[in-house]
Image 1 (cartoon, helix red, strand yellow):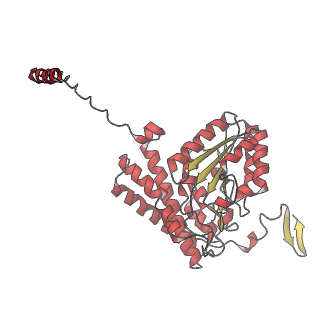
Image 2 (image 1 turned 60 degrees about the vertical axis):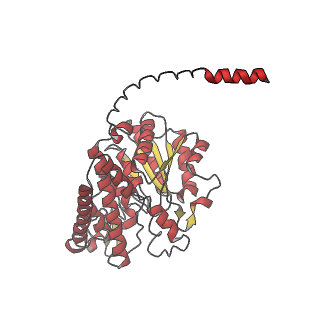
Image 3 (image 1 turned 30 degrees about the vertical axis):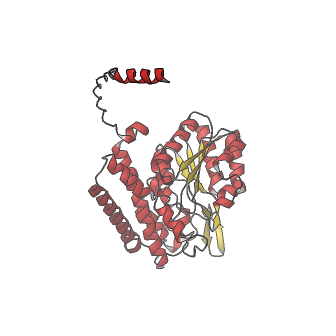
Length: 373
């Protein structure tokens, strides 16, 4: 014990070892300026990105005006507005070339505008006027603009899916590397036309991109209980084709997903099934009491509004200023008001002679009924 105590005393007398000198810190290299997010991620120019926002604003203002006109009985007939889903139509159509095609649905105003449709002619069609895309005979659910590649909307759920397959077959025969984007809702994915069409497109390697806009409800039926698999895009495996999911509230994500599918289709690698998760802010139609969903659910989705999110991204990327964004919104509202004036005040209704036009080919109305001309 005595030796141990003496050793401890001796240790305390020794000078403490000096700590090793710290190495001098190397000067921190300056970070290079962050490249433009759009150019880095998706190779998209500021001007193109701003145009995407402009089209989404135009769709939103068009749809809200249509809802107002229909609610006030200024425009007759059923109309199913697209508010909330703008990023899907605009993102998908942004990936297309001028000679590509789309097929649309009963909720198809957004598709038409995204494909370059004239809002004046669209509103004239809704109002049943002669200047409308279908001379006032089609109305809200049957707008077509073949010259712009819009093969038409249809009021039959899933009715446009086989039309897209036929167009895809024509594109393959023409060998022009064209593609067809087919829009449809989650409800249509449970129809027989969906399965037959995807099977044919798969075995023939057709250049068709099937874009399912899962807006959470088929009329009032929740999509979450409409299929056991839990999603729609995974059904692609059953047909041996590509399947993908994307956030339908993010326009650039939709654009990227559809763009990849277009590259595959143009290379002869067949169709793709894309599920874009989105949400419709309004009911199925104006008669929809929306008892199947809560106000809290609607507000939660509106907090992810595709226009607000994308506008903020553009401002952060210095693609436009807050003031410029406000001017764009005002311009969209003014364009819609001008279209309303054109459709309701300046356009005549079709002449009575139009009754049999486009109904029978080679027949006219004679003294005793229809007769060949």
